[in-house]
Image (cartoon, rainbow, N blue to C red):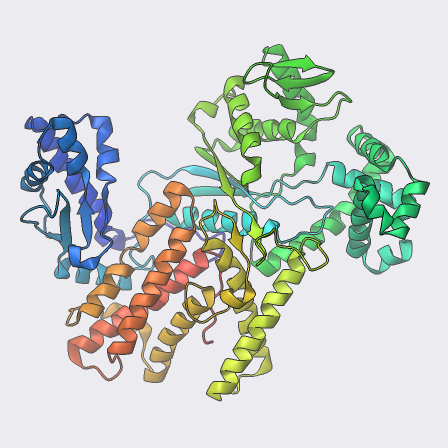
Length: 622
């Protein structure tokens, strides 16, 4: 499943797809409407969605498969006992042939339900025969822009870029699979001060032989060196003789860098020519890293693309009385003059990220007409996006009133010391070095496992598997975290073949592949001829987890949290492990064999599909 995969046209199988939770919520909605019409509890139409969202999976299977908890809140409002309200809901609840009808509430007023075995078996058969493994598309597709990754192209990509890149790519894949029209955009930082640093460094400190040999390395060296000089503190210079000498030669580096940046923005022929020379080099480097991560974009509209629009943005905000001058700068005062403004032009005439983001938003709304825009950006930019969204609303851009603007914030990657993840020298860890380390460690794990089994895989195959396992481990370790929290980066934990890791999921898929390889079984025939009858509770438990794929993707979309998908994958892998360890598959006969083969096939396909939605490759064997 690539970034460009889409669910395609509706097919006959779609008519048979069942999302048990969605079906049950519709049933509860009808029951609550009857409850209100009968005068038991008054319920307004706009309250129904919030009430039916209280129909969730049970935390413990002994209480059933799903539970509705709205009776407690409704009872308090009506001045009735929760059990009485729950009983009244049950009396009006038509569950058809999908669920076993509850006879009475549980505890203070829980309405617990169990999926009928026959309905669950039908859902498994449908999923087995369905190219989309039973996952329906959304009823009302939206156009959704996902803005993610967005590195500054003049800087080497580092570990800090991994979160935006993998979270954004996963959300884009999931939303596209759900049936939405998704537009991905890598809003490159290709026009800011970082290019001024390279321009200044090129003019004063370049090594032309080094540039000829490795342009990327030389531009990276210049950027790091100039930044060090511009940001140098006395205590740092005391320990760095070379930098101290350069600061003596060039005591005003910071101001001169800003001048070089301004000259670029003003169209200076020399700086523009150098920018055009350096951009392909910088792009080639980040393109190579994205290829290793298997991440693609529909568009690469960087800051330079919107530069011609910035003056117009400032003029329009001034003309509408939304922006005003303060100490020579121009800003939008959203909360009165006693609070910091949203600056859109500096006193020296330079534009800011705020100006570019406003121009970008204006352009996207006009040209792409989205229903939703997701900005997958570090949580530290929270205030910036609050001001951006509020300014844009007040600006009154045509069409913006129907666009949902969302800052998909995420936390920081930490080292095992609890501080931002850096090298021992205190430098930010480069993304290339991170990927190389992950693959090297994975190669060691794969080689050790191969030697233990005595399978003698060729080195080339072990390397291919290590690539999938190593990069998959890095991605999964990030995606399995609640995105709003910081997380501790640990290669040792992420490469374990147990626990909630990519390697564990990949190994589970390999176990499934092994069953069909050993048995010489035609999987297409298994899907065509699928028939399911549960004879063991472990079969049913696995089946129930598998048919919750669609529910899981719904939940991911509601809150833009890929970790909900990793949790489901972990639950499926755990249910499969329990099933696999206890029950024979190839030695089973009759209905048991048919059922178990169907469950194995659906498990492998579901785990593979879920991992691919996260951007993680799955090797055929581990």
